[in-house]
Structures are given as structure tokens and as C-alpha cells.
Length: 336
Length: 200
Ligand code: SF4
Ligand code: SF4
Image (spheres, rainbow over the protein chains, first blue to last red):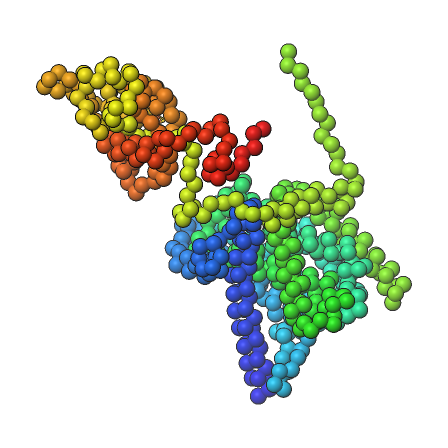
């Protein structure tokens, strides 16, 4: 009986999370388009609904009703699999992201996370990497040169930043003594991990930008040189899933993880703890700010070349991550 | 002998390298733009009036007594009623045009020996809107108007005929004939229409 109860609760929670993420991602597209517009001194979508507020719905309808073309000579299995491979793992990271402490409403304890396993961070990392294989598969399966180049570029970049990312995450883990994201947040009640881990934070920002394929590291799309990069042969919703997964869901979820690792998760901002603001509002505020930061970077900087990215990853970011481990070790020796 | 001056590309300083100074500069620019007013026009609902000298769709001025002396000279040889296109089929426009095939001009001799223009078609799909044809017209007939919405559903609809062109010119002259040419003057009307323009 208990098992059934757990399963039902988990299913309900997952559905809520997934639906929330879908709606959220839809409106993140609007946010991005508005932001991109105003950065370039144009208003962005305006026409559908007040100030373009219904634009995501119109977009969704348009993408869903579009003809879904599959080119003749593609590798059918991989071609279909790739869009799912990019999308499903990206949304599965949500399973380990906690949005706040457990709280009780009407005598029922509600945990605002799906699961709190003791290797949560590793799982998030793994899902993040699997989602990249979607891109590489798409490049391979499309049987066309531009997607192929895009996929290969992503593979080259992947090898570079994954290593640095892994080492950068060691700092916060050392300080918290746990892989569980919830425990990492709880360890930050007094001081955020950004303090000794500033170098790791820089590395993580670099890696999130590279993983989600946002400018300056969007070599896999590079619309100026590769047509559409790895999505050139895709149409309709299969195409829509890629940007949705990479640019919005992955960026949002990875921002959430970065906030958890470095900015104290749902702990209030220092000296503002007396404000009557619930924990998850703090959390979403921080995630939102970080997401806006990624947008800001995206719509400002020009694109790096692949060799420059791998060079940056191996020669700069990896040593930085290692140096960060050293600094954190000394910090732990001194301050306990 | 052309003198060439070699300028050394400045190396990044260490300070710039470590703190991403260039990134921060760029991001300052975008942040500033974020809070600026937008510069766009809400197009199908809000249309800009182009300057009077704008090179838009072609039109034919009609015979209405405002012709230049060059027209008066040959007026009696032409079979043109008032309110009709004042084209005398001299083919000057076609001569001047870089894409002469786009003109189809035909004229016939009437019973009383005068000349009548029966056809003047322009296939505007081939036109590059350079305006050379209007410069060439000796009787100030062919002009360019401020109409810029030239899209159509069929290629046939992009061929413009003499009657349409006469109508267009009448309309254009009614709207803008008396308007001063604001290319070189900087008055209030101009800044209202196209904003203050900074002369470099
Ligand atoms: S505008 Fe130029 S291209 Fe067009 S008809 Fe006149 S001369 Fe020819
Ligand atoms: S130059 Fe003027 S008058 Fe001569 S054919 Fe062309 S439009 Fe007619």
C-alpha cells in the first residue's frame, strides 16, 4: 500500500514538474525574444495578445501543425531518437533539483522536489551529458554535411568542457561533504559557497554556456556558417524540441543547479532574510537572475571558434578548476 | 606612390585578459540599449512617409497644362486628351534604362496623321529603381512616386500599365506636388517626419 502511495505521489509530482517546465519554457522563449529585441532596440513580439503575451501559444500551435518532413536518406531510427535524446534527459535533470525545504499544508507534508538521492549532482551531470548526445546523433543521422559538422563540433567542445565542469563541481561538494543537492543548500545557511569558490563559478558559467550551446559557444548551430547546424534537416516539432531543450529547459535547470551550488539555493539573500518572502520565491528569483545573465551574455558576445573553445577549456578552465580545489582545501583546513 | 601606414594590432593586456574587460564593455553596451526606446515602426499598422524624392513605383504625369516647353513644341503632333498620360513615346526612358527589356512602348499614327501612344507597360519585377528613366524623360512625364508596397500575388500584377500610371501620378501630385523638397533643408516638418538627422 505504501508503495502505491509513493508511486502515485511521485507521478503527480512529476506531471506537475514537467507541465510546469513546459509552460515555463514556453514563456522563457517569450522572455528571450523580448530581451533580445530590446537589446537591439526593437520591441520583440507585440501583436499576439497584449505585448505579445500569447505569442508562445501561437508559436506552439504553429510548430505542432507544421508538416513534419523526414528527408529520404536519413538514418530514421537515430533521426527520431535524436530529438528525444536531446529533450528527455534535459527535463529529467528536474528530478533531482530541489525547489525548497519540505513544508506542510493542511497537515500534509509536501516535498518540493521529486527525489533527493545522495548522488543527485552526479545524476544531473550525467543527464546533462546524455542530452548532448542528442545533438551529436542529430548531426550524424541527418546525412548532410552541415549537421555533421555541427555535431562534430559539439563533440569536440563536449570533451573539453565536461572535464573542467567535473572538477569545478568538486569545490562545493568538498565544502558540503555531500552530493545531495538538498544537503548542499543546507550547508550554505551561513555563507554561500561562492565565497571561496569564485574560480569554480567562472568555470561553471563557461561550462553551462558551452553545454546549452548559447553564444559565445554556439558552434554547433553557427547559423552564419552552418545554415542551421545540427537542426538543418529537422522540421516541425522535432525541430522545436531542440531549442526548447537546449536553450530553455537545459539553461533553466542548469541555472537552478548553479544557484544551488554557489548562491545558497533557497536561502534568502544576506541581510534580507527578515523579509516575509517564502523560500522558493528566493530560489526562483536567483534562478531568474542567473538565466537573465545567460541571456545577456548570449545577446552580447560574438561566437568563439571551436579551437578557441577547446583551447580555453583545456588551458584556462581546467587549471582554474584545479586551482579552485586547492583553494577550497586550504579554506577548509583554516576555517574547518 | 601610395603610402601605406602599418599599425600594430594592440595586444591584450593581462588585466584585460584576466577580468574579461572586453566582455564587460560589450555587455555594458547591450545593457544601455536594453533601456533605450525602440526605434522600430509597427509596420502594417503604422507607415512612414518616405521623402518626396523617394524612388518608388513609377507613374506618368498627365496632360494638364503644367507641361514643360519641350512638350508644348510637339503637342500639336500628338493625339493626347487632357487628363491622359503626356508620354510622347520618345523611347528615351528605355534608352536610359539599364534593363531596357522591361519597357513595352507602342505608338501608332492616327487617321489625322498625329501620333498616339497605345501601350506603355513596365515590368517592375525587372526594375532596380535606379531612377535613370525619370531623368531621361524630356517632357517630365515619367516620375517616381513614394509608393513602396509593390508586392503582389501574381507576376502579371507587377506589370504596370499606362492608365494605372497616369492615375498614380495624379494621386501623387495631389498629395505632394506642393511639398518643398526636404533633402537639403532641415525644418520642423522634416524632423517630424524622419527625425533629426545628424550631418557628418
Ligand atoms: S528605375 Fe532604372 S531600372 Fe527601373 S525602369 Fe527606370 S531606368 Fe529602368
Ligand atoms: S521618356 Fe517620357 S515621353 Fe519618352 S517614352 Fe519615356 S515616358 Fe514617354
